[in-house]
Length: 283
Picture 1: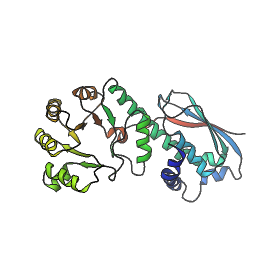
Picture 2 (picture 1 turned 120 degrees about the vertical axis):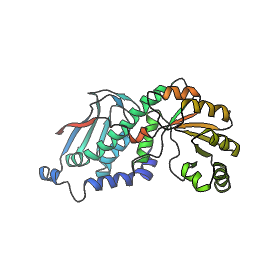
Picture 3 (picture 1 turned 45 degrees about the vertical axis):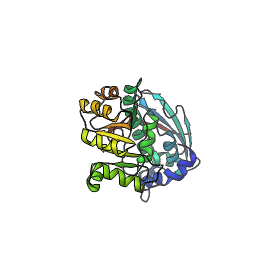
Picture 4 (picture 1 turned 90 degrees about the vertical axis):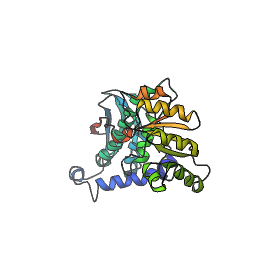
């Protein structure tokens, strides 16, 4: 995540996270540290995984004090091991103490998503199928979580509702039919937008193809149904599979020949990666 993106898109979110944690003052830190003093603390990995969010980790401390320095010994996307020293952070001890939890929350969450995504993406090696995330993200954490998916080897689906047309079951219900929903989307949306439609059976697949959908999402279909759907589509639209995709069956789904597999679990079910700040001392 570059500096421009950080300043424009995430600084205000990080500040809100800090305000949530420090509504008036850090009573504990102010009790034991009444004056500024320089210190250093180590960032340690306590679990094997893929790291993501180091720039966000650093930014938390710099928003509290721009003089805080972080010397990283790894970079986003690196595999890290239990016990590995990842960085040293130096600055005002009060800042190191007050920013610790928020900085770690971001880093642990993002690294957990990158690690989980990487474990899924590896199962697609050797195929043309791409692993996608969804909008099933934590409120006000989407930019961080989708970035972590990319670091882990996945790809981003649309970022938000303004980013693309995806006609799901309730949109189709509101429009009256698959064909009518696609026609209305083509009439309204800018021509540069692709139109994706979610289908649940083979009749809907046929209707979506005939109506000119750009991408057809096969939602919660059996393996046999998906195979038949791919034959019906016959390259006339890109294909995406969604629903009940797990590590156990993702390879079989990719073998069917879909272009994309989307998984909300990448962001809503990834466990955090255990990372700590330890050995704080004055310098």
